[in-house]
Length: 204
Ligand code: HEC
Image (cartoon, rainbow, N blue to C red; front, side, top):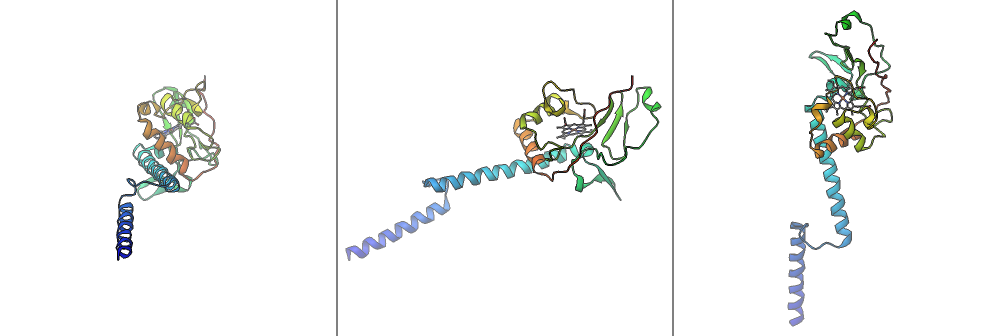
């Protein structure tokens, strides 16, 4: 009788313990193995969250306005999703325009893709922000942070300043977490091989 009672009590206890654990896994005592899988899950979730947040920020901050080649649609030019954020397409002929427009220093000229820009600063080309090696594939977060907050080409402290219309000065005060989220998202998109033409200083 006593043995049966003990067995029943043990069964009740184990059911309770099981229920408790499955209801509140974070509060229960975890074996090292379980602890590893929970922390891995947390890392994965926060990485997914960062990528989502980064996508949201890149969208509302309009990076694609300049960094994505465009396709004509019924609503006007829209980002070409096959070449999303891959910068000025170097395979496409640049086309010509009357350079006299620039001589007054009062006008700025955008190409039809809104990826090449001529003005008093010379001519600049939107950079490839995809994780290809011709884009930001080999960049560290520190490089990205320096490019975005200090306006330095390739994110290197002693490189040339980034030219208009890259509005890097608007990004100086982005929260560190958001900057990391933007970088995580850019590292997650489709890599596109495209060596963007070099910046051309203004004619003397
Ligand atoms: C109005 C147009 C415009 C917008 C909007 C814009 N950029 Fe740029 N960006 C450029 C241009 C043009 C360059 C190249 C400047 C140069 O070569 O001097 C550039 C350069 C960069 C660079 C440096 C690349 C390198 O190789 O050094 C990074 C990083 C960058 N942009 C990220 C972003 C991100 C992220 C956003 C959105 C939050 C953004 N840009 C929004 C036009 C823009």
